[in-house]
Length: 195
Ligand SMILES: [Zn+2]
Image (cartoon, rainbow, N blue to C red):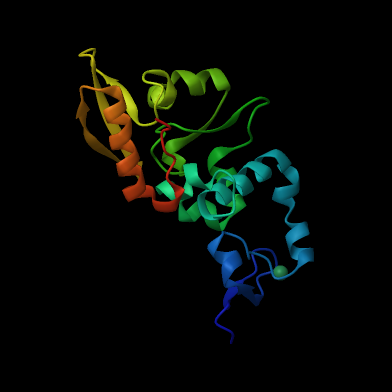
């Protein structure tokens, strides 16, 4: 057996087959052939949700995804139950209503049943003070107004954990501190403030 393949049970017909390891790591490689893949009725029944499921996995695990730096690179992941199966995802989330998108309740949390819901844009904006503050309180990434003291709090997220970098008098100094922390935590995926 090649090191690049791994034995799996086809989700449609139940046969054992060899899937590409690279596919499995990205949450694919679930079906033994194209016919089984296409016959997976649940995917055809929920085409919009299926698209959302695919892109959720892509931005968390595919380094070539344009959004990877905001998800996978900072440790946001898809739970095993959802990564392995679209059926599980639909069972937990149900069908989405028109205009709704997949929302993480805690913006620093992962894609998992306890942290996800279908929400419209308004609900999402109201429930994401941290997300909203990202650029608005200071104009810098990771720099937040500190309890009306006139000082600036620097925070960074890595693998779902929030790290408090420090409190600074000067906003630019805070932005520079964020950049240093981002280089350390996010390496080549760091999104830096332009100062
Ligand atoms: Zn099959």
